[in-house]
Length: 366
Image 1 (cartoon, one colour):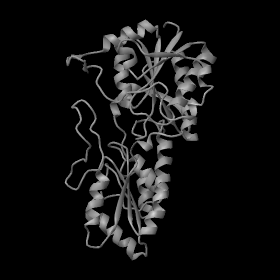
Image 2 (cartoon, one colour; image 1 turned 180 degrees about the horizontal axis):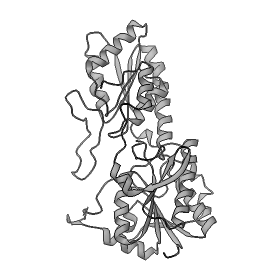
Image 3 (cartoon, rainbow, N blue to C red; image 1 turned 30 degrees about the vertical axis):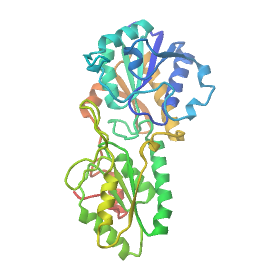
Image 4 (cartoon, rainbow, N blue to C red; image 1 turned 180 degrees about the vertical axis):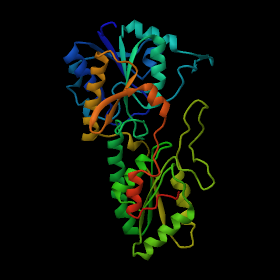
């Protein structure tokens, strides 16, 4: 296997806090330990597939500024479009695999580190195979839905943001005797909602993995009154379906793009407000606030471990591996194994669900 001299690093998919900390770790380890050149690919795969190429040669000096302490990504990112059926300006569709390979060859890249969700890594992995370039993946997602890893970059910070929001909503809920509903992200996985509800002391938590009934929600609100409480905190994941079994979505999405969830909180609030028991509810939708801000200490620590390990296994000659966190240690698994499992959703019988039920929380019905 040829010796590595130059690597690329890119971010793909939705942004989150901690991405810059990963890039910093990759750059430091690659340069200080192995003497490699590191190129940051701008705007994900588009930096290599579109012309002119978009990239930055990265150095230790680039991180004298506080990039690692900032949210977002210094390289830019994309979370839409299909590089295997890319829409061109003239309306035609093109497979960009060959363009990707030519771009990587033009930059002289020997290997690529991809920081993204499991979907992004599968896409870039396919492009890398077509280009004959080695690839290592680093998981990032506030949804915590990447399989085989206990931590993904961005989740810890998003959880802090959501928990703080619930803390702030509690005082308003108590002051105005209201049901305060917090709608959080997560796509089709309820990890962020469930962790927020437990950490923030919510009484109701709805997630996509567990069915609920309107009667169950109202019964919980009534029991709160019987217990002497005139307010309730409720967390709902954006991917929760209506009572009619449909997702609430925003706008129109192209067929090849992810549907944009949003509005289930408003749907539930309107129903609760129409209840004859005179429950007074309000909805807060955090939206992209969950993705931004200063990364937490936990995300920075995980980012450092992931970045260093990714470079080290790349130096060992490994290919198509994803860095993971297991039992307090950094390890790596096959991308094929990650793909075979798919999205990691909440197990309805997991310890976190049992904890929520043990606290008296309504988390739906099985």
